[in-house]
Amino acid sequence: MIHRAEDVQARLFEEIQHGGGQGRKAAGASKRSHPSEFGLKSPSQVAKNFVLDTNVLLHDPACLGRFTDNHICIPVDVLSELDRFKTEQSERGANARKIHRMLTETFSCSKNVTNGVPTDGGGTLRLVIYDPALCPKNSEMLSRFHRIFPDKERVDHRILACTLLLMEHNKAPVVLVTKDLNMQLKARSVGIDCQDYLNDKVEPRDVSSYDVRRIEVGPSELQRFASTGELEIENSRVSDIVLNQYVLLEAGEKQTMPARMAAGGKLVRLQIPEALKIQDGSALKPMNLGQRCLIDALLNPDISLVTCYGQAGTGKTLVAVAAGLHEMFNRRYNGLTVSRPVVAMGDQLGFLPGTLDEKMRPWLQPIHDALDLLMRPATPLGPRRKQPKSENGGGGGPVKKPWEILMEQGIIEVEALCYIRGRSIPNRFFVLDEAQQLTPQEAKTVVTRMSRGSKLVLVGDPAQIDNPYVDSRSNGLVYTRNRLKGLPFVAHVSLSRGERSELADAGAQLM
Image 1: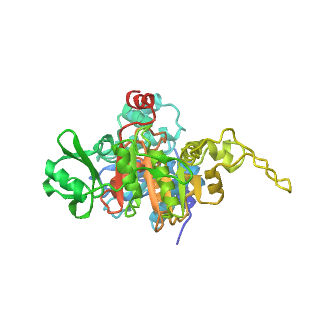
Image 2: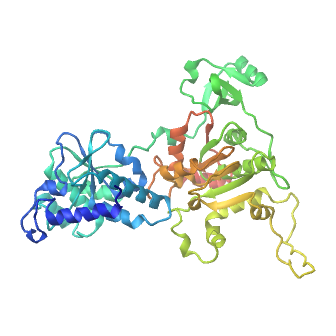
């Protein structure tokens, strides 16, 4: 039998009124109940008790299965917070609905949701109730907490108070898991052990280093590589290099050549044109080693996913869009799609006036600028001319730009990421800009939308994040790179040299 998410909460209120089936009336609130009726007492005093904040469930709905043999505690106030998000037509709303379904299914066979339901890892999952009027007598620690944070109706404070009650009624450690930095500070100020959700965080070394790996070779080896395009090196020198990773072969200080690790442990020479030529537009030449490596990955038909880190001004978006146009005009793909996430995944769109295109223009203007630069005719046209009027009186408007015409034909798409759910994208060159703003679940949604024949390019700067739910080690860009690196159809490139201007490069590094 399948219950609605609201049934779980309704059953909770019924248990509060009837004392968990023991016949206690709500009018007898003066008679304090046993802690187990409110989920305060753990089924076992051996394993840890992890209290999950709302943002953890929204960040990764699969987190309920990642605490192995420990006890998972979800305060009922978290359910109320989930209700605020479940109607959103966004990834966050989808995650809220998924959590509601998972909890409903988990507790569907349980008579008392506060007793604890066994999980696959050997632990338990239970709901915990905090009600100052009905819960067991407050301790000095909880009274002190309310003196420090007197607002008892604030959800964050209720979750913290619930955690303090769990600490009092259990000998085993109680840990609050939250991604809210302010919540972490409040928790530690009152003696609560607080941790971030680390399951999808990558190691710091996988984010901080932007340098290309350098390998010392002999002059004869470098010469053989230049003539044949391949070089085999003993495993001890390349054991930590993954498939499709880019390296720089060095024979002395001035003799260098870039290479890519191919299947079979061979280093192969980059296959890139002198310039990316855009039909009736501009040609883009790689300006440094990182851009050459990126172009090699973008033009390689055997690589269907490219991730790229790069600070502001390194040209990551411009090169990716140029490669997409180059491949599109060479008929390797049916079209080019360029997208970027609207931070908060679409929540701000309704506040902007006008049509959908007018609402999206402020968010997508950087992509329009890149298309305008790359598809601008080689010879200047001077002031924008107006179209001549036709015999029926039509025309007379400004001349449309080449990329605007292709957009009308559906060959080029520029859209916000919040509309990708449910799509299947075949035979497209898909560039996702500002991918560091994604959560891991949002990144998974994008990756799983790609059909056969499509290429996905994720570019961004892990150091520039506006999304409050992710950081430099847990965002969708670094998560995707970390989980999929080493696969034969995946490549990663880091750009470190700025090419926008000396001012932009200095600002990115020193400010």
